[in-house]
Amino acid sequence: MKQGMFQNAQLRQEMKLAPRMMQALRFLQAPLPELRDLIRGELEQNPVLEEKVGDSDALLAPLEPVAATLDEADRENDFDPDDFGREIDALEKMLEPRPLDEAPGTPVSSPEADEKRQFFLDSLTAAPSLHAHLEEQLNESGLDEAQKKAGEYIIGNVDENGWLAADVAEVAREAGVPEAAVEAALAVIQEFDPPGVAARGLKECLLIQLRRSGRGAESAEARLVAGHLEALGEAGAAALAKAAGLAADEVAEALKAIALLDPKPGLKFSAAPAVYVTPEVEIRKTAEGEYVVEMLRDGLPRLRISAEYESMLEDPETAAEAKKYLAEKVRSGKFVMDSLHQRRETVKRLAEEIAAAQKEFFEQGISRLKPLTMGAVAEKLGVHETTVGRAVSGKYVRTPQGVFELKFFFTAGLKMADGESISTEAVKEAVAKVLGHEDVRKPLSDQAIADKLKEQGFQVARRTVAKYREQLGVPPAHKRK
Image (cartoon, rainbow, N blue to C red):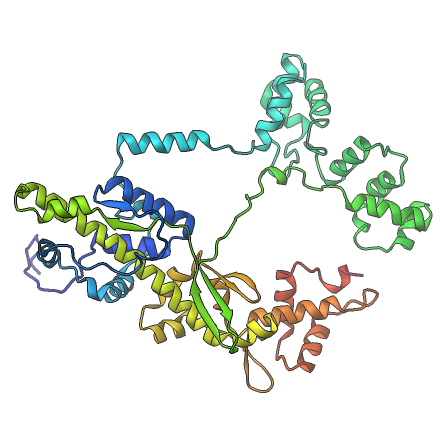
């Protein structure tokens, strides 16, 4: 066989990945807060786009071409505004997900934009980390040089739970200081906020908190933690009282106090910030008993093409280069407006499908939630399944049962005894109700729960019950006694 480098001529069809279509996908996928930033970026970089103040809905429909020049430019760009959905769908079929920060269409950086961005970042405040919080207290502790160095290493070995993940000898070796200095520093740090920080385990963490709250080693709480920690969640009050040599009522009060302690005091510094959601669409019941869909005021800037630049584009005295530049900017702005309109229409159509499928849920709650798949809805709407996936992520709907992410309504189904399908979320709710009504003295096993659900018409296996019970955060029966 002859080896070497050769050239071949080959014909094949390919779709060109238009940056603007990528930009349209970003608009479709973005939740409202991110979408506001994207629109602001477009306003900053495109001089022909401007915000129309005082009109929330007038500019939602696609605009007509503003000049014949744009029609010609659109043809050159091979972009058909009247077939927007087909282009999006075709692109979905060939695109792999990519990070948003790599997607084309990101606003071009400029000194003015960078200055605004930096001002915004400088204005943000963030809660201090656990380590920063401890280091601030260490700097004001008055420790000597060796103890302070040991304290820095101790803080560096505190994990996200607030516990010390190294022993005294290890810290002394890493810091190059005597163990006595480490012991002294540790005693001081364990008095820092939050109470229980730098403990070397759960027992020490709880004992530190008890001591700092005035419950010393001789208190009932400290005696139970020190001598019977593992039995606290397993044994009843009577058994604990007998084992600890305490009165039953004393143990009962002590258990209440122990339950208020924080076993992982560091987690409050790593907790995710609260997320505030704004519904974009509402499903409501009319006086006639029908469920209708209405788009809500979303607070997004309403865009329009500047009349001044439009007139310049149509003015025969405008230089050819200026016309070419304006035509591109107007076409770009028009595409942004078309993208926003398409996004709004897609969200509305999805909400209409949900409204048609989930009438019983709106009337009776989660127990009547019907299974619904993205593939089935995509087939009805004539789009690709990944388009539905992008459109439901991060978008919220207000319903008679509360505010939900659109994605909430897309769940797998489970067959009932009568052959009807029901959402897995409804089954999980049924498991929660059975657990809520069980006799606390005789907790139900997973098989017993499955048997009770079978009586209600749910064909659920024991392992399925176990999975839902774990998702609900409920321990097994032997740990609920």
